[in-house]
Image 1 (cartoon, rainbow, N blue to C red):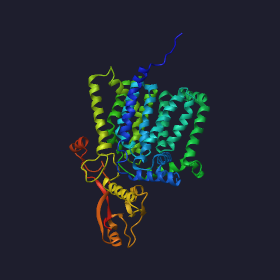
Image 2: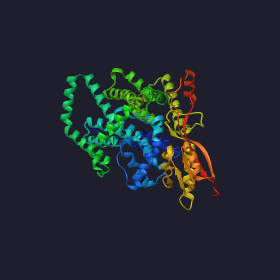
Image 3: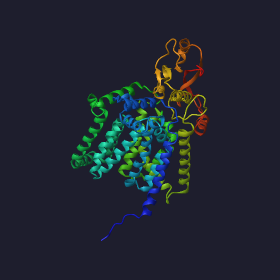
Image 4: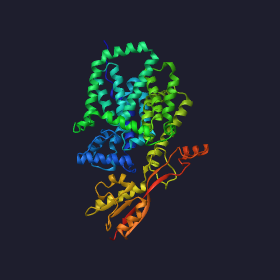
Length: 516
């Protein structure tokens, strides 16, 4: 008789200390100066809607602003820790850190070393870190979708309790962002391609046998999914008319796709994936080439799913940088497996050198994107292509100064804001006494923000005694504009100096003299 012994304390620590180090690294990267970057237009909307939910109990699902989960999580954070630029981004940051839990669970299939390398890659990925420090739904949706796939894999292998978790995680993914519909469609297409590869007759027999064995569990998972999604979209059934949320979501986002509201060339995502995620895509591809016919069904499915994701977002009409997050995550386990072998005892010197160079370049890109060039402004001669019509620090600095002055004043400051600057000012000035329009004749607000074409009217209404300045509100750099030479492309890759100017939309700011 063999008696199994629990691992000794030293063995337990030896296995886990690298993971503790990863968690510490991820926490530092996600939380360091989290509230400092200027709030993007969308971030300000998400923060303000969360604020209204927390303190006014006002929220209703609108597919324009995506699912309710981020708003509920952010509102809960406000109630627990106060509302600030830092706390508003905490749920997205927490989701980014929690992706390490997904990597940890990969040990069962890919082994401890491959899982750890996958965890390192998701920690230092420029895309996942940048948008893990950003008040958007993409990283939380990536987390829930990943956990749903893990639960489904475990359920298919006989873990009955995993079916319940599959319903929970899938429900949270669908209630976070509508990309979950795309993910589900791609998953179905991946299964269809796998069935064709195995043969129609065999796949049909296997599918029927699977459904027979797991039919009850699958029905239970679907029931959990419905309970989670409906209760969240209806806000605890307080808006029962929103029970058919898929109809609203699909019709709205299909319309956005057809009109190409945020248009761009078909190759919009490809330069960014090459610029930032070359290591993940390169290592995953190398792993699949090396494995060849020996690759297991899960490995092939992940690779095919990843390729289909890239193809789908090439096709979809909405072209924004954060959608790159949804194109890379299926490649992470494969890339981790390749790096585990390369950096292990069987790796060759040239392969290790290449991987080390890729890791160094990835770290440099991550630090630049999230901590050095994390802001965009026409006053700066370098820019990261991850920015997308980002609020400029000049406007955000002014807004924060006025908010700080209001907090220190005996009574509320009266200010005026109109035009393009209403967002992000509705978030920055949420506690101020704000007229969200041009000042009335004779008004003497402490500060005024308006579009440049309204400056003459503002001067007439408020009279003398103000300093005024034109500042950039939002700036952008469009990679697909211009006709860069090979040298200019190489210069940008190495220095982030763009080949066309940074564009901006400006506003006028008026500050009343302190003596008044």
